[in-house]
Amino acid sequence: PRPPASLPRPPPPCGASPGPCSSNGVATIGVFRDGTWYLDVDGNGRWSEHDVKVNFGRAGDVPVVGDFNGDGIDNLGVYRNGTWHLDTDGNLRLDAHDKVFELGGPHHRPVVGDFNGDGIDQAAVYEAAPVVDEGMTAP
Image 1 (cartoon, rainbow, N blue to C red):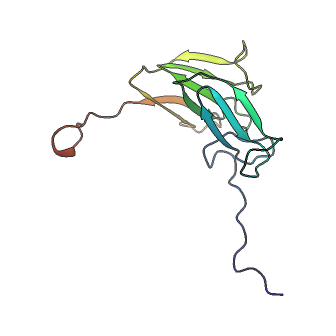
Image 2 (image 1 turned 45 degrees about the horizontal axis):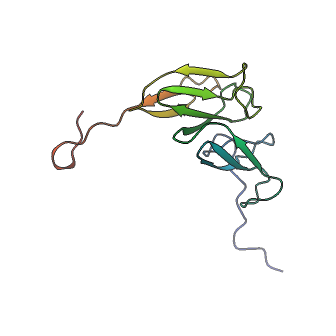
């Protein structure tokens, strides 16, 4: 038999795509809706009995994901009008071991990345520039 014309690609490594990472180092697909996360932890691309539903946040929160503790596994978080709630211990709930802090405000958008190269993702915010005449943006 002839080999296939192309082989399926492996899933991207953790951090190469949005979404939390499972302990096997593969990025996990997830959906955030009204404070509930739906995580496809078995990686089959559909909701099944092995997947996880997590209540972390509330309606109106903006979901964020990153490796907030440097262990190589992405964790869940939410941004709420300038307050960050990050599940840094990875137990899928907000408790005393997690980080809650102020950075930004209701008009900002959250951004997560390893901005200093230390292997731990940091929080940042940006504010979109207002649109002015003829579709140009202000500096």
